[in-house]
Image (spheres, one colour):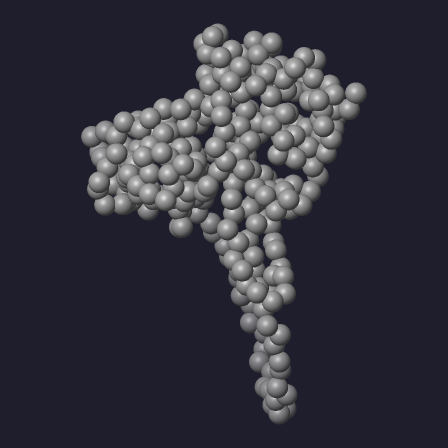
Length: 297
């Protein structure tokens, strides 16, 4: 029996309590929730399925039977995303792997949080078309970005110069000082938006108030440059869906309500998104990312 083993060429970075994974062979990125991330990180070819089950039991404090069912569902999701070196669920699973809908019913029936349901969600990455030769691709944090090699430099010979040697001077070099980035206490999204794995259903073109708290007023410069963003993702069946009860016509932007200790960002959706699913990504200035799932009608 072969132990599960992830692809060796993939790179990853922490995304909230989950993981962002980029597979250069497929040129595809994925976002894994906490359950899938835990399984993926320990698919090292040495850890047995039984040991992976033990880790799920300890991490989420769940019964062993449900932990084993979650493990094989997570491995099935990772296999479908082609993130494992060999297939294991079709040959080694002790019983047929539960579908997502069956797993949702099981978790709800014993009062477990649906947030432990494994999620491996593909992320669409837009890459600039620079034309000509392929640019150099550098991966630093798991997400690809392109850099253009600098043009060659030419040196024009200069006439010889006469220099006067001065006695050496002694200087004291101080080590550079760095200020650590703050780590915000993000408490999840507040209504009307539900957190994953729930999918929020809303009419395309509406403005959605994205509400969250960072445990106090941290100022308005809390969102990383270029964010929030949304990305088209495949619509997956078997996940809980909850309609958005509140929309907003306010101007897009970030505000803070001291009385409720809540930030609100009004996300203006596009009418052209009707019939599609998207992933909203809020990246804060401390480098953490927080996701919400939406389906548009």
